[in-house]
Image 1 (tube, rainbow, N blue to C red):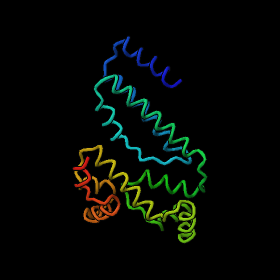
Image 2 (cartoon, helix red, strand yellow; image 1 turned 135 degrees about the vertical axis):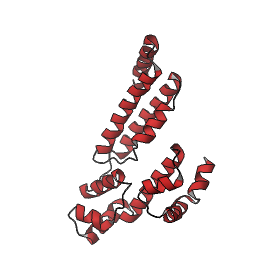
Image 3 (spheres, helix red, strand yellow; image 1 turned 180 degrees about the horizontal axis):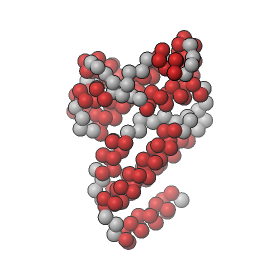
Image 4 (cartoon, helix red, strand yellow; image 1 turned 30 degrees about the vertical axis):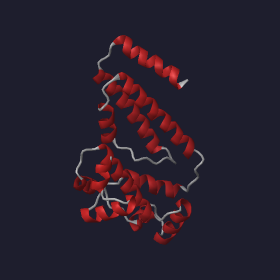
Length: 193
């Protein structure tokens, strides 16, 4: 069903000879809406970045490439929803995770998060670890490092800019965390790509 409907859509674009810029703009709007809807779903977490998505879409130069990329994008989103549909987490944990994912550019402490959720810090710490298998601090670090990897893969920002964007005052601390997370420095990681 996905492929036949998609083939019709691509056929219409070809038949009407729409300018590629217009088509890319439409696709960006569609995939941005999908990403935003997933971001606000109660049990779905994402590293969604408008900037990275825009760079990806506007980096596509042919309708065939766009078609392949969009099908891959949609299939991946459907698989993510399927994987997460049975996930049962406490509302407080989902809220904390969502907040972290939407504020990766800030410093986020466990005490501040517990306060934001009107919970005692030690109680929040216990339930977070019980529900997720990792501490809140580990979750924040991992989320920031996954985002750093994504930015190193898909953006032209310098390592220092990425460090700053992820809320690190000290880029040497960022380097240390990234090395512990990925087994190499951010510079080595980018050269490996």
